[in-house]
Length: 93
Image 1 (cartoon, rainbow, N blue to C red):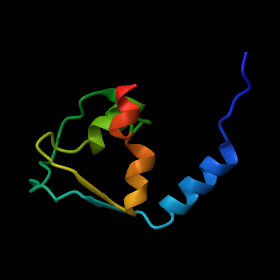
Image 2: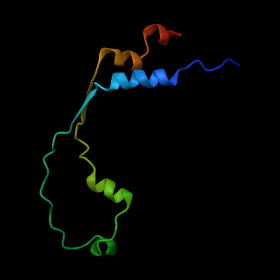
Image 3: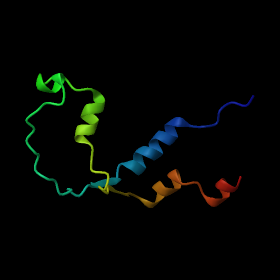
Image 4: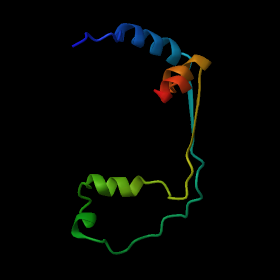
């Protein structure tokens, strides 16, 4: 069995250098929202008593509209692409 030749310290250094100048921009346009309709009857006893909600209920409450488009733009140095994307020779082997 051959010893591992990967140098993690060098890899960390390369990533640190490449990622120091990376900019990430996330754009989420505000969807037009309707004003909430007043509810006169609670859907359950838990709603009436303002009990804690489950993770799923919180997720549903704060979920984005399915039509919302989220745009993520990542800009950085050119050599970052070579660290992320294999060259054509590497992908052929």
